[in-house]
Image (cartoon, rainbow, N blue to C red; front, side):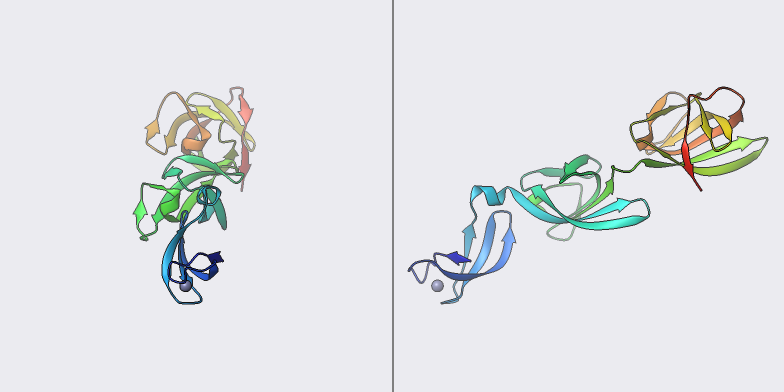
Length: 199
Ligand SMILES: [Zn+2]
């Protein structure tokens, strides 16, 4: 890259970029060796590239995504970045420390869960003292409620309790996105729907 050098004071000279942070770059003049800072134009500082580890059930994808440099990222919150719908789980800053929140320009790595796949929920269904466990895949916006009857595989079960990311509920509805485990008992009642299950 060509930049005006404060030492050479001629027309712009070729420079080597040593480090970049947001819209600031530390550069060295290839002619005289002077190291100095330059600031990129507005449109450059708007975005930063951050390596992002995206957890997608069995696999973790590593992608370098473009974030607005001044966007504040919070662990636990959801974001849409370059078409990826993510919930951020961990943020590593430029000092290699894990932080709860940070401006994108100050982040070296993001850990996230993909929200583009259905939620995967453990379903325990009891019948006469025996419990069978399944994994159901449920659209993240789908609500499940205690007392509801659902079909799964070849049985219908009534939900008795739901373990969420924050505790166990014995009444009410929860979005699949927040559900870890559903406890149910086999019933002959009519189901409101059928859950897609795997293995
Ligand atoms: Zn120079």
